[in-house]
Amino acid sequence: MLLMIMITFMASAQEDYVVLIKGDTLYGKVQHLNYGVEQKVQLTDSKKKKTVYSILQARAFRLKGENYHAIRFFSTYKYMKLVESGYASLYLYQEDDKRTWDGRYIYRMDGTGLDVPNIGFKRKITEFLQDCPQLVDTINAGKLARTDMAEIVKRYNTCIEQNTKVSRNESIAVTEKQSATRNAWDELSRAVEANTALEEKESIQEMITEARTKTERGEKIPKFLQDSLKKSFTDYPDLQELLAKAISTAE
Image 1 (cartoon, rainbow, N blue to C red):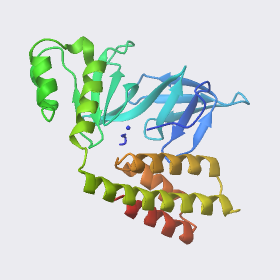
Image 2 (cartoon, one colour; image 1 turned 30 degrees about the horizontal axis):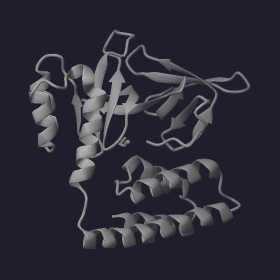
Image 3 (cartoon, rainbow, N blue to C red; image 1 turned 60 degrees about the vertical axis):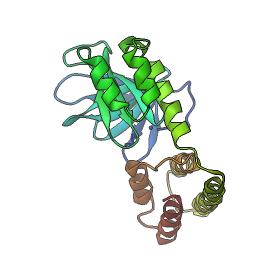
């Protein structure tokens, strides 16, 4: 996922909010409920109404200036606190029966992840980051350790960015493709704004902005984001067609 899971929120950094799986962003007082079989999040709105969402209903939330995402963790999902974002994102999570955020997890945009271990750290992390040999050498030399995970992830993302640079001719082709993609998303955005019957326009426009930003960066649009947009346009064939066009230009 996502998300990647890798999600860019457009809301004010001073407000807490919950992002539902369908894409709606709800503002209010947020409380993370980490007990029982499944983690949940509680939202208290401006009318003091409290609503509890399961981790399968709310894919992300913001609490006291920090972002939390629902990340697949082995056979389940956990809410994890975002520390460093990019192609690979570093998260902190609460281990079973603990309240502190001591667990470390790396999640890549390709859907793979690593639960960063205490024992066997060097072997596991270098295997996971083997596509960046220079970084692997630095870790093996003992210059970066488990306590330096944010720096390791930063360097890894820089490495990936450098490794994916294209030649001059390829760059021109990419630029042309990005222009076509940007135009397609802009066309969809204008159509959404002009549709007087469409609800949740603000949330939809935020999702469109996020998708456009990702394609401009050459990143893959997460499936959950595509699905959320498709669901928003269920009753609008013209918007479905424009969405399909925008997505296809990014592929």
